[in-house]
Image (cartoon, rainbow, N blue to C red; front, side, top):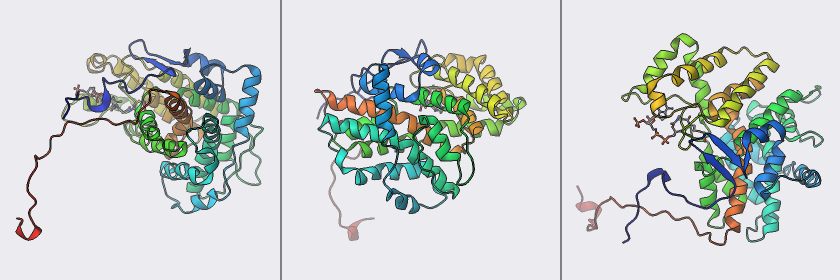
Length: 392
Ligand code: CMC
């Protein structure tokens, strides 16, 4: 028996070395390969961020054209996948459908599951990036009872996704370029966040040599939890429960009450102990989307006021609890027309970029080992087996 450090939730154990993403929790900074996420959001698009995360540098114009072309060639999913979707109940949660359907890709694309071959790893990575919007849109269309919309590859990544979600046959559908741009930004903001629970899950699954589609399905399963990607759904529900600014003090009091399990959803973070830079950008995207869509912004006002009230409250200041990415993202996605059940699916689409980058980095690392945490056993010592007739 060894002596192990007890570190529940891995709050002080680094599980890997990584060159991908740097979170400075005290300064409130997030860098992808050294670039501030705010700069990538302001100037770039999501596929450029994918390239950056995968390869380590921003692409040249020619590299970008080539990468975009390679992704675009893989946006369709095997037609047989339609049957797979049709096996789900219509009222299934899109994330339940995503876990199943993304996992099933390994049954459709055998040719790219060789994890030993770096070329095949890149092929499966590009397939995943290309197919995620198609699959998330299919999950949405299926649950609404509408027909699937095929990708239209002359559109950009986010615009294509919006069209696959919201177009219907025989009706003209024009993607609003401002909304497509807002969605590109949202995807960049969500693309990676170093070793979050779902990325750690992907690495752990991948450490056994499991195929990339199975690993990403594991990441999706983990992301679905309310303490992780499901927080945007929970945050929006909370804002709707609060309903109007006058009720904010009551909810703040509940969040502070040690006897009450209620927490302010979209507040607090394991690593960001200062303002989450993504939340600031997301707040402005939310403002733009509301202005574009003309959606009534009562809950946005509640959110702004809640942020202000918590920001001047001793409890939140002392515990360093600030809005996180999820605080404004639910409001934004709702204003774009997505039902709450789709929020985490959009998050999964974006985070696939980071999951894949983490997975590829791990497999290329000669020091990589199968992930195998230890435990401190606190159960019964050895005892004698008693036949069932003699028990009790
Ligand atoms: N509202 C009220 N109190 C809180 C909150 C909150 N949102 N978050 C943390 N606290 C308190 C908590 O009660 C604890 O108090 P005490 O020390 O008195 O026991 C203290 O702050 C530390 O909390 P913790 O749970 O030990 O911290 P953690 O690092 O394990 O948890 C967290 C981080 C994000 C799970 C947590 O802040 C939380 O539950 N937030 C609400 C859910 C949420 O917004 N999740 C999204 C996470 S960010 C998106 C992502 O990366 O996926």
